[in-house]
Length: 331
Ligand SMILES: [Zn+2]
Image (tube, rainbow, N blue to C red; front, side):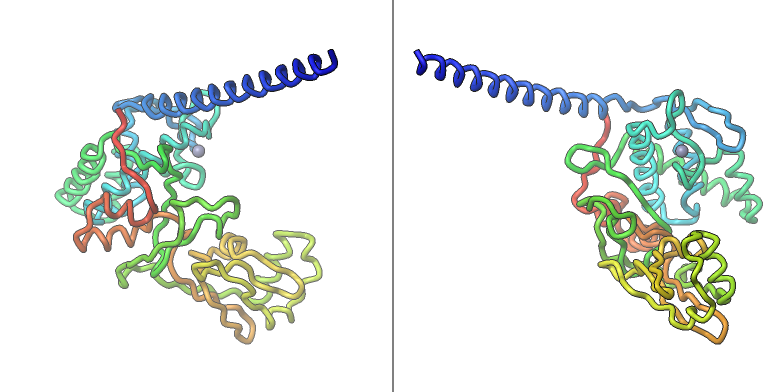
């Protein structure tokens, strides 16, 4: 009798375990189906709802019209066409990833704030910007045709890793090496956003830059930023030093007195173009000698232009900056 009861309890447990296994498998299958559905749902000529942050207005437009407004807002129009195509595929991938993340809430897909989503101008605004820069009408025409070609010739193409859209981060310039995402923003390491070799034209205007900050300004801003740094004193500036680097050699933190300040924080507070810098201490000021422009993660635009001018295609450029990815065409 006792044995019978034990046996039926065991059978019951095995049954439960099997059921939960089956449910798990079913859930996995459903997730997979949903993922595929998500990917296939993005169709050409899809309408996208863009919030214009200045007015708060939400404008619905064709995805290609949207991309034609993003690409020249994010990349100089005189870059090589293959670099512009790479930017178009990056912008499309970034856009769908934002939609997937529901970054804007109800009724809006994406906004035009470059710090939050992607920069965007409508065609009239872009042509106006180019005119103000002094380009003649023929040049403007060529630039617009290039933007259009970049968007249309890569129609529906997006970048994926393991079947999912990638986080297609990009930046202006990072001479020699790009940066791994976890080294700058913490969090998990993404296999496609790791540091890679990078070649860039040496005549890029912002390849190097210098920012000089007086001791007084330096200490005041650090205190204003965080009240807990109230014991900072001017004399500590003489002892400022870099205390640790990222794996690709950017500055992670500097030491000021007893405080560790992150390089990202310094970048924001003092308008440094990147966290790749050295420090010189002068009589009354700190000099940051900065290399590159931007966070250094993913595609380097100056590098993309360099590789494009040296015969690389946009696909090769994308696969160079995003490790192990595929470029697929959405159905
Ligand atoms: Zn946004």
